[in-house]
Length: 126
Image (cartoon, rainbow, N blue to C red; front, side):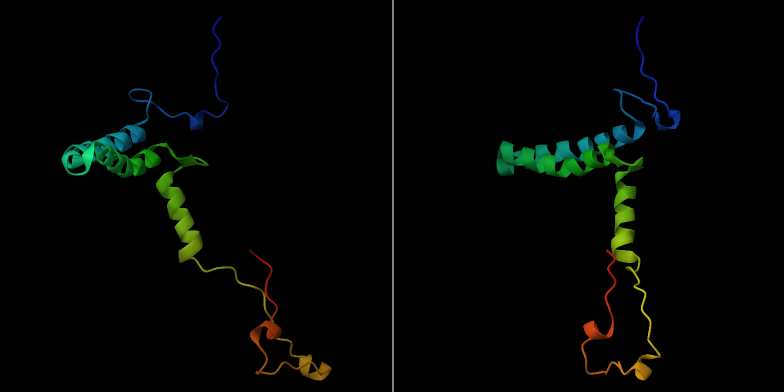
């Protein structure tokens, strides 16, 4: 009797269209091929066969990366968008800082001439 491996979570199963590839993979590979092959054919005479091949690979690799890369069920462009949002567009960590209104009574008043590192403690976050 043949043994067939059935995944527990059927929502992760992706439908395959042709050549055991998903629609997304077919579109990305096709787009990479439509851009890369003419680049190779047009630059083969100017930079030689090896140089044209490396140029073609460099142009086609981003399309292949977009087709194959997936992290936590998210495609490449969504992962990159989330990284850009988290690192550059959103504000960074906000440390908890207070002003001690009782410092004057305790004789520990912080003057304006001291460096900021002595005025406030740095948050030990990321």
